[in-house]
Length: 135
Image 1 (cartoon, helix red, strand yellow):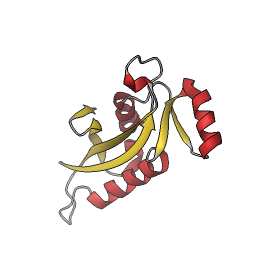
Image 2: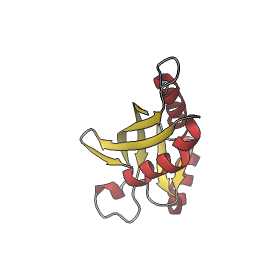
Image 3: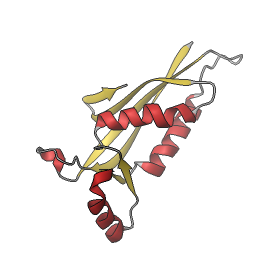
């Protein structure tokens, strides 16, 4: 088995409800996602096509999180105001859009559906270039 990893960057805005520090305010991020998929090498010598991983994950991130607002489902009042004023789609989480919750959501809900014949074995969400969460 071989692990194949891609890294994708995207921008979003979020806030953490009930957090008393700066992250309790709506603010922007330049996130990165690093996803590793495992599979056996095929006849052509490739385990998982990097292009396929990157293309599928990038498409999902572009449609859902990139240049979007990520909020707690309980923060619908703010989300509705943003949608009304900007027309922007809001992505709601069951809890706060922490790097931990983002990583867990991608790892459990999104990545298993992305690449047939490969399994996501490690996923990182970078909050900044020097800090990350790994599942």
